[in-house]
Image (cartoon, rainbow, N blue to C red; front, top):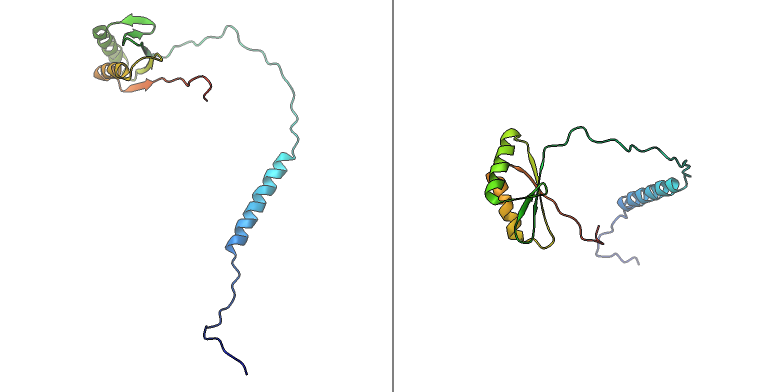
Length: 139
């Protein structure tokens, strides 16, 4: 006597998606191994370097530095805030595409840097960057 199950018989399916994944993995592995098998042969060359070459034109940019007391230096020269606004406005009227780089010493406060940034924005300059330098030991 043959007993029948109450469940309907299901047909087995062959799933192809995992097979495609495995094939891509094998392809990528083969490509990486074949790239490692190539021998790179190079020659050491000692090329001459230019010793007297300088740039013919210096880009027109403003470098502002803020110290821990909030004092500002413009291209290495100390400047007061009223003079800073006048100088920036005059330079902006000559070149509307004038970039400004603001740097601060390690112990300069955030508020003093933002105060200088406000002066730069008031003069009409829109191309402003705050220069940062990574701490030693960090990349």
